[in-house]
Length: 238
Image 1 (cartoon, helix red, strand yellow):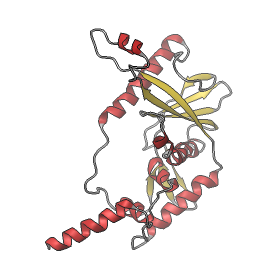
Image 2 (image 1 turned 120 degrees about the horizontal axis):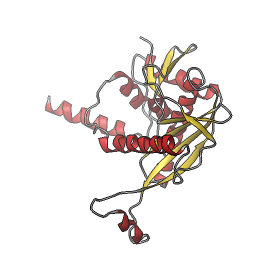
Image 3 (image 1 turned 135 degrees about the vertical axis):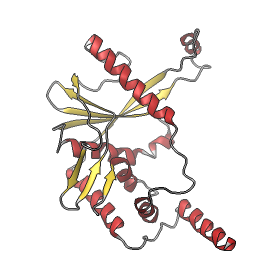
Image 4 (image 1 turned 180 degrees about the vertical axis):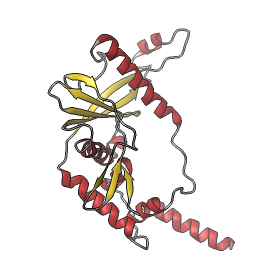
């Protein structure tokens, strides 16, 4: 069966701490023990931001002043579900899929793909940038072959919670009868990579997936160390 992989999963190949063994296990197992589901609040915030921005644009004919500059926007593009927003790369026969948070069509007819991240833009978040870079370029790779050609621009938009009351006591004025939490939006552009960037990662993912046995783990992989310890403990009980 040919591999179907999400843009986010493909992005893990670019991380500095990437482990082929962990990647193989994730591809082979639908569920992995001791995983904590992503809290639903993040998807709720993403959905709320998209609804606010779209409703404001439909009413005012422009993006809100607090929204970072993303070019001269002509319209919001309708983003298909992952069942339609996908592409099978012919060389590897891997199907790449994923759904960007927002796609703007610009005045020149090109498209700007945006992905929201509900988090502070910290040094730790910077460590995740290689994964996000692949994720956004994967969206562009699909878009250029399906619904959104040509893709001219990619951006990460961080939703940074406004919580520093000591530095900005005016934040308290947002809350009257109801508790209100605001966000500062910060944009980070992503360079569009050539096609072979994504195609090489798809080939690498396919090679790992087709291996009959798990590849060797990296020497510094903490997850593999924990896995070995769990196997050891389980063996003692038997």
